[in-house]
Length: 329
Image 1 (cartoon, helix red, strand yellow):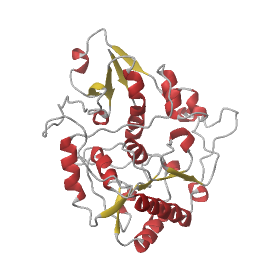
Image 2 (spheres, helix red, strand yellow):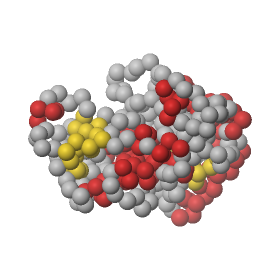
Image 3 (cartoon, helix red, strand yellow):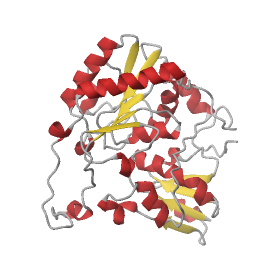
């Protein structure tokens, strides 16, 4: 039996779920991660452990194969392949464009229904214009440490977009997928729900779509088959994106910051100096974002594509929680 270990953020964990079906063909899959809830209800994951679970290693059989393969320490850093393509190769499987998979349970479904009642309008979209910090227990907020700013949409432009959107679509609420200690949580004209990240996939199902950046929301949406608009900056869809989404950018020259730069060497592989991209000069215009967002809404209305919140196929007990061992049909 194998235990797969993952480091990184929620989005990276959700992306990994695209590989689980292929890994399950090789044998039983268990996960050891910072975000065990991402895998807790996946039908092909036998167990999902937290890195911080007390006594974990005392309970793991000594013949267990603990597997850690980090794509960020591979040729992926040269931005020539998709994250999942390189990760699959490191794990000895083939990636063929599979999307992530998100599986909920009845308890989360009920909780999401209650959260949706807090949204002031029946129709809504979700937005994520910044990110990069880890989600935290909503009852134990931490000081926000900005990260991933090269992927963020400029704050003033995000506010301008929300102002234009709410004026053009007064019947659609804007739900801000931001944590309460982030500067983007203070954007006017939208609501911050301050709820657990594992409920947002159910909210996405009930939404009219989303506008996001290269961060966890776009991975969640792909995991439940909900399309939206993703704004790309220093990274690109060929690295982290999915064809299910409308991917927009002002540049085709996306690239990861070379790994060496993380350790104090600010030179690229060819010896040139690394210079952070000016997000203001390369950001997608607000007018362009409005145009693409309107096209998304028109498409969903024409096709009646909004999935609607519905109980997952999880066979768990209604009161399942942290110790739930159910596996959906």
